[in-house]
Length: 388
Image 1 (cartoon, rainbow, N blue to C red):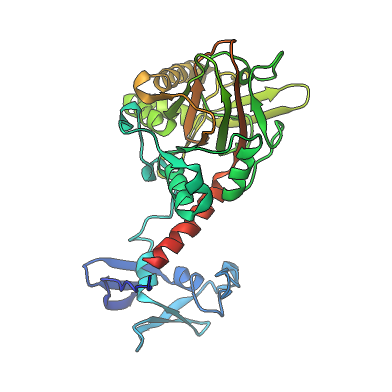
Image 2: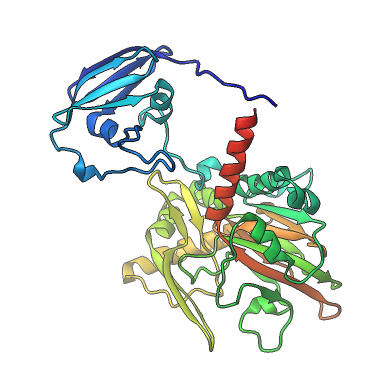
């Protein structure tokens, strides 16, 4: 398919200098105000940036404190030329770059917060769950794109029809990023054990939780590959933790603030590991948007807060626990042999129903991280955009 150049539908009508800012009036009525030091810091020329990787070749401390804009004009190529003094240095910016990167017209890049996700509950999936055929995932970028977009937007997807082979989950991770090895190893078995070091390795039902909150940084993506399932019960349950936190905030802003402002300890300890963290149950960014949730009642260490905070914390903690267990927020399904569940462990809580001791249930799990998955997603989307 031939490449198509999409010309921007905006252009500069007027630009002028106002004190320490370059002011740009656009043809659509919008205005940019760009600080002189910001412009100098973001110079795109090869004298300021490596042409191969775009990284800066200077430090902000190298920019003179008394830097100011002496002159700005549009040249014959329609680019904006800015002359800085007392350095007597000229930067050249395309109009397209200035518009797309202007900080008062564009929000910061953010692919992690609730604002950029599709929040869901049980009734959101009347037409089945997000699924990708393994052969499509394995053989072409379109299948990978579908799975990565599901994880980014919804927090999970199911890869179906994967080979029922031990260790296969590591091969899937290798196509997406890198395995996050923990004290459980690169790969961990989820099946009934005698004297297990974790209740996940029994036939008990498990409440909604995120994995490894006692680890910092926490593994951000988990994969579970079903190899065998001939038992009654053992259904998988997922909850959108971002949606649950949003509901908590709507019902009680006070309880939401308690859980975002108070850090507690999580701990896992056995004969080979003693892992501890101190983190909030709900983590927010600078815009008060949810970016991570944590809940694992099995792994909460002794709660030590100032006396005046204990009672409010328990009110909020109980409320949070009740919200995530509401039936209308849960999707329940049976993970079948050959299916791999992949989910964002900073957003999606998982659980399972109890299962019978008769028959066999064998899953293999592994962890990877969102940075590798999102990196591949960005690359594939950039390639897709270039072909449009």
